[in-house]
Image 1 (tube, rainbow, N blue to C red):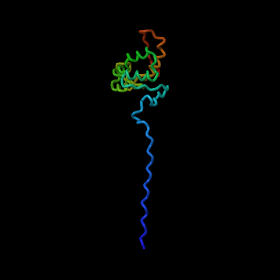
Image 2 (cartoon, helix red, strand yellow):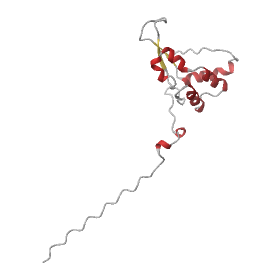
Image 3 (cartoon, one colour):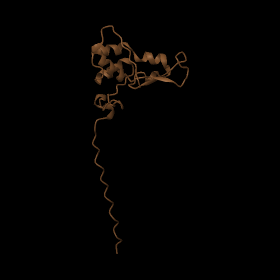
Length: 147
């Protein structure tokens, strides 16, 4: 009697179908990416690496609209305030978020734990856009926060 025939080799498993290939995430245009919004007011966040790119982001996001406000933001560089008041926080100067600035001993307080807050750039932009119709050429305004 002949020995039983060996079991046939198992059939190769079918390979999973290839995953659908979408666009390379690195190749997706940043403009198409969802924009983060301020948690308080919902305004699109407009970060920059320097003053010019921050202004460009504020314009692109529709926060800065008038030529007068855009020019004012270009002339008054936010980084200058941070560099003088809190050089250790300079890397935050062009982020669209508040920056805490320590009160120096030359101010009315010498407490090292006291800070003032410089509002996010979009907050200043919104205020300035509201004031543009009332301002005269060469006029000044003082933006004083209350919270």
